[in-house]
Image (cartoon, rainbow, N blue to C red):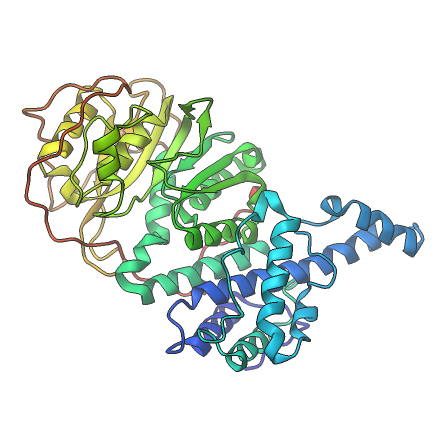
Length: 473
């Protein structure tokens, strides 16, 4: 059924239309998400710009002569607009371009929007190319732009930020499912993120960090949980993330904006282990909360340079082998925790059984009394493989008063605890005790690596998604 451009959109209608957009490119290009997601963002930004201007003229500047009111808005764009869209670069301007020039017009518009909003969008669209006619012929690009146009205005009146954010995440999940093993590199299933957020029980002003941010879903779950627990007081909460893949980082930045969370979010691009972006002077910045799903069995995580040059931040005291770098990220997270900080990190089960560096780290965590829980996740939760995984929950302040709803509180007050089929032997023999965040010599671990696998999971329809909390905005 055709969408009425004057009626409010339902989440199902929006999700179905977006999926059809992706299907227009299916079997033609492999990286559909790199085209579909920016188009959704561009149309929303253009339509909201017009809606915000109309609202300012009708309410904020009522009684001011029309020309004077427009001049006030144009001289103070950041006051009246969440995203600034430069003149001549709106959706309708681009769509009216002839088919052969459409790709260039899209490139120009998105890059100008990025430059006009440097804090939120600097660099996000610089590597995007709608004008590559070999990858995306002009006629196919015209078809998908026209299809997007049939959605009608993506204004707040028709599509709330909650709904648009849920549709965007659902679309990311769909792309992750289609990507199979590779999907786990940019998306963590929503229910895994929700569990992690519940375990952390964020306070109203907590700062949360994800060093392997992907498309930002885990951070948004923590922000939602803060809003659920604290309502409007959670406006003081902030989220921080770093993502190594430029395309995935761009997805995360757009994700924050479409969820209405841009004011609370700082998402940086770069290699967390080699060049962490969040520093206090020359030391790592610390955070009250950390949530993460680092890549499972990564191969190019930085083993060679760490072995050769050492870690300038003194984090990696146990160098994992090339084939399994998960605990390098775990050590970075422990070093990034505040004195009373808590973290929830998704890890493959092998981290809790293998010897060598992983065994040594487990002993360090136990000796330092940081481990609060190890929680087995259901099987088949992650994209492309049935690799078993769990949450490791750590707490720098065990024994002190924990916030209501935190992991310790939840486990202590539970009337019954079911025992997972897989029991974790936190073996601690033959390892040195932990030293506090100081560098020491690193050695490879000699062991036989298991088969390489990556995360994966099933997606749900957008109509099943939970609405974002209004208080977040």
